Image 1 (cartoon, rainbow, N blue to C red):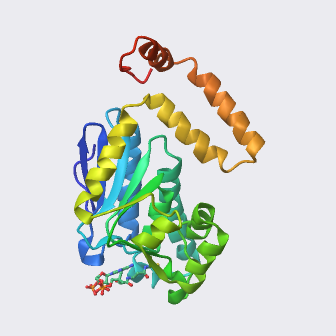
Image 2 (image 1 turned 30 degrees about the vertical axis):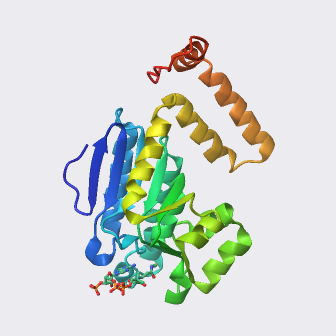
Image 3 (image 1 turned 90 degrees about the vertical axis):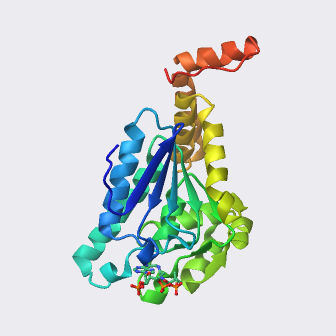
Length: 262
Ligand code: COA
């Protein structure tokens, strides 16, 4: 892994990579340099064999990511506005479509691009002080990193439109109620809980985990019959793996499986 990042910290332990967005003086707001670093780091984690699960979080206890960097957006015209959005989309799609599970550990403000980044992750845990919102319309713009697309798909059109059109903020309990996050935890337990879940995922067959993510991620973009067909293809493909043989054999021999990702 690259050692030197300006706005990112990475630690890897027992198969889990924790990527911490680190611009605390700007509440971890995403400028294009930070987006570039995040895309690069996520790509490196995807190819690094010893990493099985990624966790994204923000530095400090106040903010996950307080949005795209407004001082950067304030300068944009039509052409670079579109480019800023596309750069964000590239990063979000990479997180969403990559082969390995990505958990968002939302440790404070997840506003604008911060909520959009959390939405691109596979699921979200939040600290009790987390605050969620897409305040863009209040700045005279619209969400530009996928918020208008991923939020309604996750929580339903009506709830998403209320958040997007009012630009209002919701707390962690409300986020839990609408299904935006899976769990709410005290700040000091957040990373531990996300790591524990990551380790639970890591005990499963790694190829199975990757294919299951692919089936859900690609399948939910398709009509049901096409998604079912994709699932059947992947199901057939996984039947050629050593991991499948090991998983079944271990069950029949009443022992824990030793998956090798083969
Ligand atoms: N882009 C750039 N800088 C940001 C930022 C963003 N999205 N969010 C916060 N910051 C900066 C502030 O400008 C401030 O910098 P400064 O100390 O150099 O002035 C610093 O982070 C601390 O923020 P501050 O506003 O003083 O903290 P607060 O606790 O009073 O308020 C927020 C926290 C999150 C409510 C407030 O910062 C905010 O509304 N941020 C913008 C959220 C947003 O609209 N995001 C969507 C952008 S498209």
